[in-house]
Length: 462
Image (cartoon, rainbow, N blue to C red):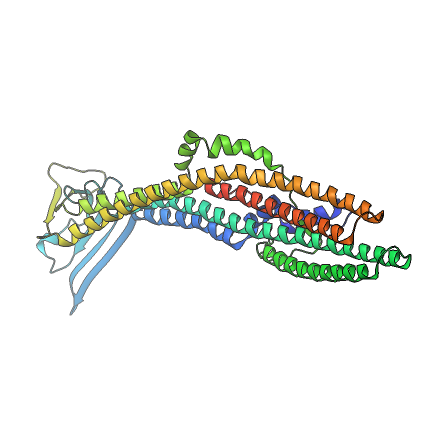
């Protein structure tokens, strides 16, 4: 991708005519490189990475320390000190290591510890709720799914961006070509007016011919002015898509012109072998941004359902601690602490409601996937079949323009020889202008048909 300023500067030195050609591919490359929407699309990946980092952070080890004491009337009632590290694992087991010390006149008997303190290493195992999944593990699975989701949404956003930008480009192209036609028609009308005036002085033409020629010239001037106005508006709209690497918007100059360079007939092979091939098209759907986004949503919904099912179970946690006065000697058989904790909601109405909602969300995603898959299938087939028609229209328009140009040239020769009338000449010119406009319309429709097929295919390529 080349920045716009560099691109225009390079083309300026390569064109002696003063006009700077700006292809659709280069135009869209600049849009992808610097447009704010493209930058926003990149933020989706950053956001997904940040969300994943946040979910992984729930399993980070944590250091802790405490110091709790009470002194009254010169008597030390108690002094509790402790420090340790704890961490939750992805297997649903909590691990911790601690050191605790306690002293004081009025210590609770259960809080009495050796003079050097007490070391402990333990684990908390969830035997009921939390055995297979919990909120931490669910959040991590959903964050991993969101990475794929945001990547798919980024691709879809860039696809939409390119389609909208291409629409503005080809409207600019149409306005530019229409202005060229209007200028050419004005020039021809002016030359004809001057020729008829000369013929009138020589006695070869009637005076009424000058009136008709001047009317035609005046009309062409008006049409050229209107076309120039439309071109300025279309150029400004196309400029709205262009931004420089410094974050500043770029304006297209009048010397910068859109072009139609590619041979569209070569693209038919891709349409037949990709878009209209049933096997290739079916395989492509699984890689399409829409399908990838829905798959990621499905994975996140499945994780949510697993969590809601897990919350229907009773909570049964077992915590075991191995105790020792020294961290280097542990006697699991004699020195340990064991804690069991159990709880169970009586009616589970909230939990069952959450599970039902999660299942409804899953079903909604599945229906959305089916609808979008069929819509994409029909759009792909329709666009592929329409391509042949657009190509035929463009080919016919080219031939019509060529034939109209030949007829106009022949009529001008006859008119100069006095064998034709101004009415016939103007009629030939009107048909020629109509044929040129039809060719321009056919080119724009063909170019946008190709761009729409790229959008349907789901690959944001300039």
